[in-house]
Length: 419
Image 1 (cartoon, one colour):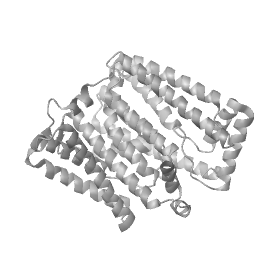
Image 2: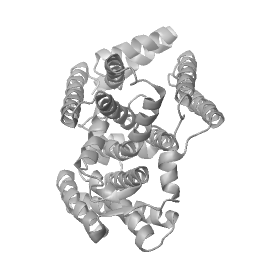
Image 3: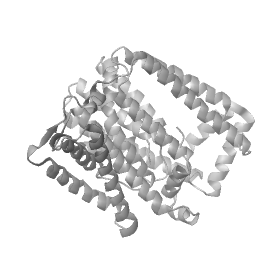
Image 4: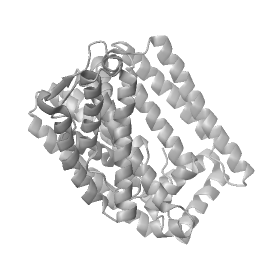
């Protein structure tokens, strides 16, 4: 997935124009050459995380033959999804060059609000779930006021939120300490037991590939109409074919065990929609613009405060949804819900997935790739019966490596004039 460029320097424009001339003159071969030029210029995109996933798979498979089993892959995806939803909000905040340290606490507090309404007040699932989501949205709106109008740095108010909403979680749960969701709760069933049938999975696969083709064909037509160099049609068709074969094999392989759970399908849908919003809408382009250069964005007429407000609200809403899904998966909410582990895992996933800490560069798909990397590491170490302390050490090392790669590629982009 390509990242949106936000740098407006003449050198960056010249580099992009050179790539377009190469594609126009040499077709598919030119597209490959342009891609290699971008890589040499520091445009690594998601290459490091994909290579990392391959290395992780090889290492753990060699040490534990059940790592790549259908059953284990199903479990990895199912348990990665809820925290991945939280990480999706972190991606949006990082694109602005900001941070939210409170997403774990917000997720736990929102889930507790929903659970208490169902358990102590007899609310049905849907109204209680909506209130839980609105709690997250309201917190994001509060953050927006503190950041935009009061001028409190995001690090400070989110750190305060981490502490405050963890206390709010304890207050809402009260003497109970733990609230168990009803046995017949649809949330429990959705998060734990619901899987697509083989027929549903393959129909969804066809829809995904058709949607990919439709979006890219529309892009080609739109760029031709504007007199710009369109993406290579051959390259688009090859990618669509690879997507069809890859997802088809994965669907078949997961079907050996239980198939696609509803939870990762929901997560993938949210990632896809946010990717479209970021890359195909005016709002998304403004997010990248503000993250790349806030002052330039303001001077170009972008309503910068509105962009910050929308992103902080979305981040906390995704945190609330992720917390609710975790509650359904664990069948309860407790005083440990949304602890530091959840918080740091969500943030680490966004960075490991390829979103830059410097703002303006990243993709919604970073949340998915990053959380799969972390969940794969945890699963592999668990299969090898490695102590949890080692898992934290390995996760920290992977996070440090991701940030180091981002820093090096940023320097390479600067030196090559790509921004």
